[in-house]
Image (cartoon, rainbow, N blue to C red; front, side, top):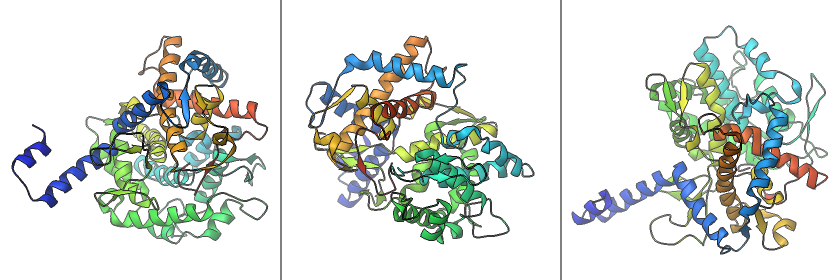
Length: 428
């Protein structure tokens, strides 16, 4: 008998019973198993041509895997592929900014270095939603021009070094609660070189996200410290969650969701908790609480991938990497459309922009999650490798994300993805 059935048999207070059901539904929706379950249900419908917006063509799987493999071989001919993470963007333009950061942090203890790296990468990932087609960043010391994710990464990197997220001029290399709460639109625009002629999508949403982050830090002293709360103190908490130097990637993901769920604006709630990147689709069967909700947690997983390297540098062994999923964003999703794995059922899907909560986008993202798993399996088979030797984090980096960008540049002069999303600066 399940715990819910046992409670029903004992005829508990209805309010308590409801609370138990909500908590169980919440815990499920915050798991990567739920992502694969719900996305898998929609994927099965797509394979039966029973979805409104897309059908799947798995006959293209081998061709798509071959394309991704070609990109992987070009980018990493020695097959020493790192994890897909924000740290790769800091290396754009053949400039070793990470080495420079390590030099700046050299006088600190390894633990404090990891905290600072967490501070940097957390604010940078949270500012990573799509920049739009017009925005660019000119790096002051190199005069190199960067756009999209690399531009956002490098802009946030330099803004961090300048103390843009710290309230203490004597300690600029941190992101702390007071600095984030006082983060302004002017600071973002100046740091990201935003102007009338260089517009960035979702400026106000990004600023709100930073301010909300500052408030959340103060509300969770167990995770972020009571004295001068910082995202970086999450390192200390995660070290405590490890056993014998081993830490599960899903544990990091769970802590990320627990720590940052309240920063997302205007999202659905369950058990009084902000669900974040979770959206409704009517093709899922009704029934249990939250049954029609599809979780993705894209930025939370992207952040999880990006936190693993500083933890490894502290000597932790990360296990269970493939419990995390592929990231359902426009490059991976665009790859699936451009290579024919996903076929839009109407021209409006590729000619009109769509809201992030529309069923068109929910379908697109859900099918992408499962197709990335299928691509990873096919690529491993071609290479005679295993999930241990070629985890999903490396397939993404090698990989599907880069291949999505490459095929988009080949298909469209401006390199835009095949489907356009109306962004508020907080999702993609």
